[in-house]
Figure (cartoon, rainbow over the protein chains, first blue to last red):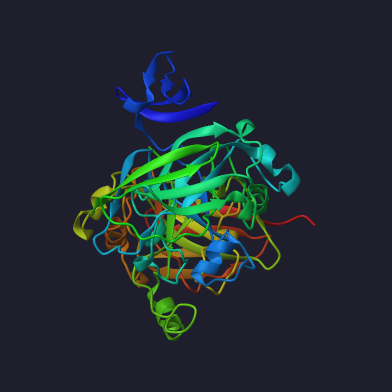
Length: 250
Length: 205
């Protein structure tokens, strides 16, 4: 099953994606056209959302970092930074080095504490797609990547929906692509992740208790492409979804 | 309304700590002093419920003021920022000691029970916050030390990220916060704000 969070006639509701992704079945059974939906981020308020930096060896090489860090580079993201499918993201006038980062997102399904890697996928209830934009001009070397880069309002498109984990046979065998105005700028595979989804769930569960609805943005492959206001950016993960975002001047 | 969203905090907002580290800021890995507020987050799962387990080596026990946001802060000026605050509480932010601010401190700060919060009351910024261990004061700091006072901090954050109603902001940590070990009862006090008490226990071998 795929579940989307949408805004419908004054309510914030979860709808089931039906009819080959063209329809959304509301809680009252009514089906509306997906093309008419106002998509919200499928993120619960108060969820702990973790994100990985430098978790693909090819991307690390591209940025001049070691292929594998001694400790995973993990940061958190706040509710303010998310924007739903087909939404707008501000592209600051001085953010000339703003680039999209297509990422597989794992959604936690039950409390995870001290979980072994071999058991970790059992704690993942679903997957979605995020585009964790970075603006390199705003990087500072304090808690890097710092909040002014990674926690800006509406700069992390996420969605369109959450697909059940049972529909993703192997989360480490998914093609990820990003295209900007139709040109492919990222084309990678989750097979190249340094810490796998299971490895990340296990690692974080040693640090904290992951709770249902918490999320892990698992990092991005190579392909740094600077975007401009007016660009339309598509992030697609095979078998999960295709996330659209519009960059607007700010 | 109470806490309904994210918990944010800032480090390097303590003037004496900034002065002490000033020479390091020009070196690797920092290269230059921080410009924007240096933000961290704690998950709701880190709010302590009952005694706190202290690992070997102890925990840095930093007292601070927790501000509950009642109105979204995007674009507010420092003059308007207090209008966004719904309540304040005392807080004790516990973390594994680290002398580096280069990478996010998730592994140091995010464990379960690493944040103790007192009761919320109406907005006031106390002159100082005291930390007592078994009745003895082991640390006190004046909020005059904040590089960015509360309203300025909210405004400077609001320039790029919205603190939303239901979020909490920890306004800064003292650079000289003591290290505590298991066994003590810690109490955080400040004039006019409900005190906070939390027991520290050793992790069973």
